[in-house]
Length: 540
Image (cartoon, rainbow, N blue to C red; front, side, top):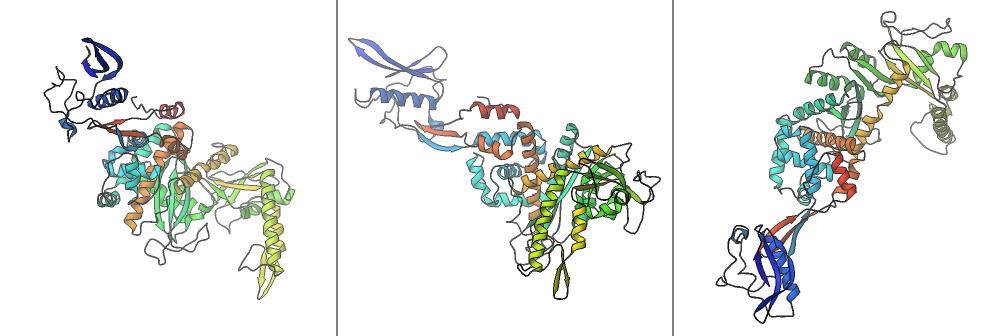
């Protein structure tokens, strides 16, 4: 076996033998440009000649203890002289480690592309990436980051940086970059708002974690989280409130904070929210801020809003029928005249005590509502007959110890099936009823964002107890949600699927001949297409 320097400066490894004074080349193993490559080629050549001769004393000198002690064959003009100290041949190469560095680099590239590197905290960046890949505690995030090939930090370092998130105003920087991205994408014409609750498995309440109304019917201490997104679901603002805070009181502070942060006072914007935000004070506050709003209405308001229709046509509606009318701003105000067959058309000047109301009827929704009512009626009858026990139930009327079926309430609910209402302060000549309904239905984007944050990103701050830690956790989740949403928009697939496809592509760190080198993974066509959508070029 011999080594020959080529014209390009590489070292060629060949297997040869002497025959009557001549060198006969048996095989050309390959050419090496680095120490690690040379070690691999020598190992391959050694395996070729094993069994044909004894240990080869010409190929490897004494094994160095550091990579820096290995000579660089590319800069040497002569091969090592035979006088150099010799040692026993080294064994085959070994895999020192594997990691999903490609996934880490991709997520980091999107993070930087959104401008979040303005935070200038690499530990915060790593915590966001770890949250996207595998949501877990700060302590366990060290394992996730190690698996991604990131620098492994001590828990004290991670905790120290996490404590800076709130005090250093990281959320303000992230929110400004989110606003810039949504503005450039043209998604600020419609803002969507929704609220959720995150519970804690704690016995006692404190200043933030309190028992309140829970959609999941839990009695654990919780916090209330409000999220403002653009029309695609990209996050713009997040707020955290005490667990017993009424949902209706959260929308105005969030929207006001958003307007003040980005100096948008007086800018024409439309805010959409579900019926949970419907209150006279909220609508008045949004109107005084110069904002247009579209808020879902409750079915129980239909008889008053559609008084003329019910008077002249009863509870008959055609599939797809839309009725544009008015709704009083306060319950004691009467704005409809049953003497007129047509519903009044709302105008700001002529109806100062009312808002515009739009009601739409859907046969599909009616069938769904009828099914729900049938189940509720069956449950109510079972309670009345003593077959089930319950403290309270719909359509059950209680008088002392006697219980009876509330026939009047049931009949009223059955007359309203299939109706969906919307309240707005946008005039009909500015926005037709169909467009108002379409904008309201975009609320599924914010619901999708909440589902992503609560499932894929596991937003529940179960490992945090004090307010600053909870706020820091929500800032990390907020940032991770923005990165995840951007990836989903550009790839067209869920963030969980992207992570699932890229994480198995692992780089390998090989140690051979005393040298260490990391080899990147082979990228299949499907995964390379994901990288193309994200504008990421791995360079190999």
